[in-house]
Length: 53
Image (cartoon, rainbow, N blue to C red; front, side, top):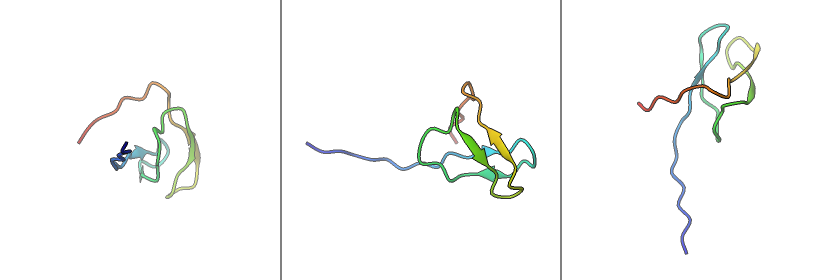
């Protein structure tokens, strides 16, 4: 049996300053976060769409 892990980077833009926050190791939808740039708190909406780039 083998377990495979694929890495990806999820980036969520801060609703206050627009800075991209990318320190997610899980699906960020529904999570509470603090912006790396402006340090304001925000919640990622549970219904946020995902865009593959």
